[in-house]
Image (cartoon, rainbow, N blue to C red):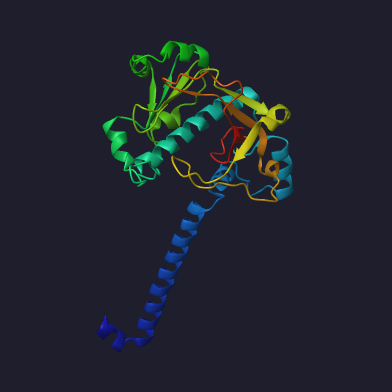
Length: 294
């Protein structure tokens, strides 16, 4: 290389400049990716990407039809029933994303000295960090009564998990998750995190689509959770950009109310849904922020 530079100084300078330019571009891309992944608007930006503006549509038309409830990605207005199926798949995707934080050792854990737990090992050893869709029709109450709180509740959960025609999802790249349209109404969801101490169940009546007027009727009972927490998953802050008309982006016309319970928990089912998630017009969930009961 040194001999080439001496013999061809001008070419050597051009090559050096090209190498330098490539290095700068690569660093800019790396910094941009880091900012996007660590931005407090990360989940918001990811949701906006799921209902993109077509290149041949003006911003004015895009925003007007968004406010009217149009899903540009699928080129249609969804009914609440259709949105429910999409939202249930998206809710399952959120559980899978939550599990991925365990697999990637990104869970801020409660070790004896407050250290971050190597949670991926627990996922593997316990065969945890999975989501199951079980084709049975049991409401939250019926499911809770069936599971019970005695020593055999895990045996009953395992019986549901090992039943016929159960779908099991580990990663969002699993083909059975990608191809599952969640069109059936008669199913429950079981979400297991890193071990058998925390299994969350969603009965067949766990979740309802709310339009904006229905949401406003119960809005005062909830508070928005967009803050950083010390322990557990989703610990980063996550916000919606200020001075943003969210409905102009096709978000906030509909919401998903969710009521769940933890296997073996002796408490009563809550009177009101535990969480309320923003939806876009296509039925995709905003992972965070979300509303929680006060």
